[in-house]
Length: 425
Ligand SMILES: [Zn+2]
Ligand SMILES: [Zn+2]
Image 1 (cartoon, rainbow, N blue to C red):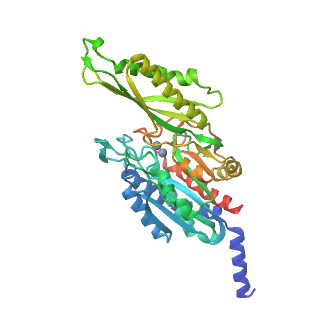
Image 2: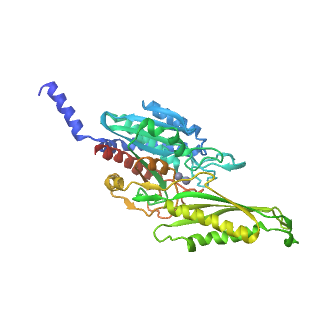
Image 3: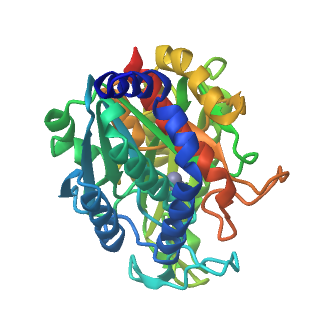
């Protein structure tokens, strides 16, 4: 065989016998060592929503070191990278959220966070209690693999490192919605988006729902104004606390008595009740706040109407003045998993995890990934990160929430397999 022919045969054999999946399987061990190291570093240095300065710098430096085109300071601290593949194909977006939570970490891990900061005027701990450290590290790993193997990549991969998934501080904009408002989808024009979230599920298992996957999250704030008086002379007062008690009782009849939840679940919770300064004063004001979770926009409107009606009724009955506001701190729509995508790509998730995929019931939690997957078809799934063999463990937002490093490779593989299989079609 002459040299030219040998070269040609080698060229053909590499393009026929190697693809991104088999290359990843060969490269995954040293890559995961890096991913775990990055995660520990990010975990030890968590940052609150819209304050992800160090994390964003780390991501930026990594992407630049790989020769990836990078844009920074999107929605304050967001980072977007674009890996341009060597072969023609679609642009696929992958998303990782970067923020931690105002929680004092109690895991006892060697790389536990000891960080304290100011939040809403209080001194608080900061912890990656939702596992976003794992999301960032996994996507940094995906970026490294795809950038180094981009000759085989069909199309482009848009890497979205998003701030403020947990919600921006009061008075600030942020998160997925703000990244979209700043035009990232117009600039990069992705066809589809994928994202994952770690949770206290079985080790390395992927859970996915088709259609509505996570609820819409709305909020309400009810302000009650009465007349203040001495606690010994209640007849001189118009008591906002009595009115609050009536309101809370009645709010709890919405789901149980006033709306039809046969096909569409709904949750209404009271999370804040504030009033009074002393035991012997009937105060002038009271305030109630809570959350509303729904999967159906029409039902959500019905609930808002019911709350307004209840407030009017209680105001009339008690002589108080009552005002109701909705979604003051913003609103997250339903996180919808495109049913065609789930059908087409569940086999890829199974292949990536040795069949460790199960169908999940929709969660009443909420996600601002919903803004992305409302704009273009999207798919969002959960990765179980309990230690091997553990079924029950503290969940997201707990000060004891622990991510087992050994489960992260399944998440990284899943994202790469989704890219490879989606772009092939
Ligand atoms: Zn989260
Ligand atoms: Zn969270």
